[in-house]
Image (tube, rainbow, N blue to C red; front, side, top):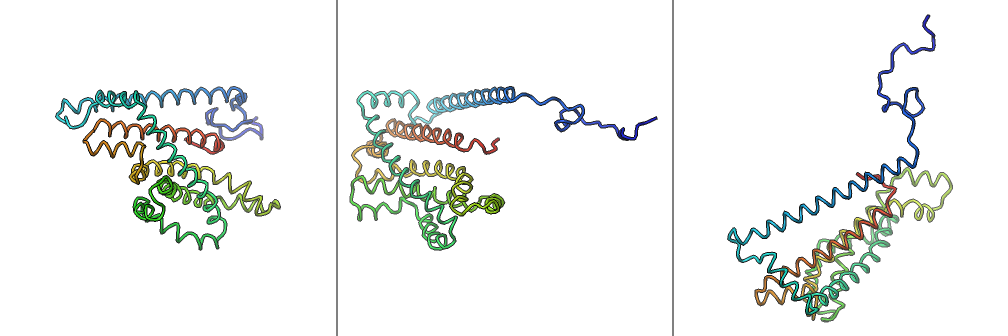
Length: 292
């Protein structure tokens, strides 16, 4: 006779579809095994990504080298650019220009980020601050920082201050919107739950809002860094004695295309390295966030 406790319909689910603890479900893997598998997957993913990057680099260099045989003789090839880069490295010009540009970018970017984060938090947390500050932020976002160069020259002269200010403005306007969006995008359920548990506004802001906004802030910093490098060449129009942008503008006067390419590649490489460092920081600070 069939037991009254026996299910009338047979469970046809696969073992991996069963919840832990159900009859027939596979035993959960020890934490060490899961960590090892995750590490192996991460290592394979990194190697796969690195391999694809190297393939893309090789394809790009090959396509560049083919431009001259195809009739694009006005574009210098990789050999000519590498030769010119060697000359600029040998006499120290490239190192001096790169250091000057990196110093300007880092100074303007750091100041812009330090100013953007508190302003974005104020706008996102306090409606009064949002009403007072948002019109100015949105207004200056529509004005390209490059358009302010004549004004900065008149008001600040031709020293380092106007160059750094233009870069600061580009980084600030990119980062402040990200910080603001990070605050207003925090899940209200988290804030309400913290209030139910008795947390004050200050505690909620520090323990809930700031961590939840961190991914937005770091993305804004990456965008701000790109804006800072994008503004660099125009900023070094302001009577700069050295810098990658300055060197490219001088090369333009003499139709020195290899030097222009060296400057372009140097800016791209330095910007990419700094962006990778920010990406590493983002992964470490937001390791709790689900990613693909």
